[in-house]
Length: 299
Image (cartoon, rainbow, N blue to C red; front, side):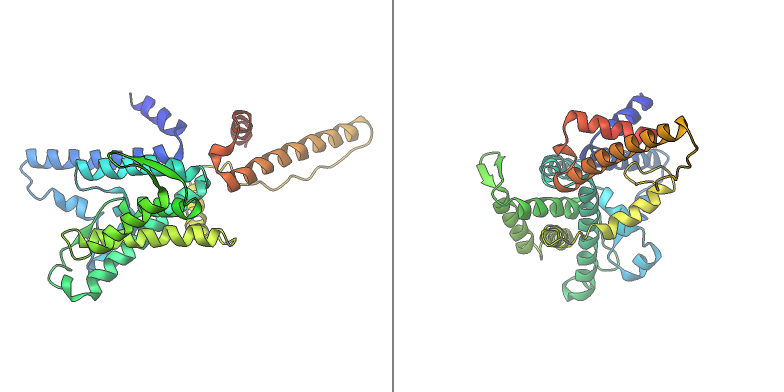
């Protein structure tokens, strides 16, 4: 069973992988909580708090990793169900216009901007003075809203069907969602709504600047690529071309043919990668996806 899950994870698209990760983390902490209570430990939540984003600057300095980990944690079943449903729907629309790398960068940037807005609000506004030392943030909402807003900026006329409402423009949906967060800034989930606005700003900046030729997701993707390179080989990383030496006779002709075939193959892969950059992985044909997979498998 475990091997089947690993195989499904590896074969899944990037949106599904992120959903798997969020669900796996949620289930992991649920099991920890249940086991701890059965063993008589009423302070089981203390383990999870090490990965939640604290509003206290003192705690944040001690737990800087929470700037990233909080966006993969959720409070309860309804919380994760809504966020993962939204990520599933809007993540796929996002990939119709942007690449996989853009998805990763926008998700993480949205989460980081949400974290900055949350911590800043709790340490600036007197409204939060009494709770700043004990408040924490969890959830992928800011990251998901970054995905939604970026897609709405890229294709404002794109229409989605909402239950009981019908067809609406994606730009209208994004605007209403942001306005609701603004109106609820002093509500029970004030911190979450500040985080929503941070995520929305991240999505807006990404889509707007990308239209001007500036890809802000590189700020995230380059460090992510470096970390990934420590564990796996990146199939999209172009390797330095090897130098060939030639000898007289038939070997020389064979080398020329080999180089010609190699250059043609590299040009084909470069064209596919450029297509992914412009239209996302979903824009590839089945033959192009197979060609890219075969090339990455040989590296």
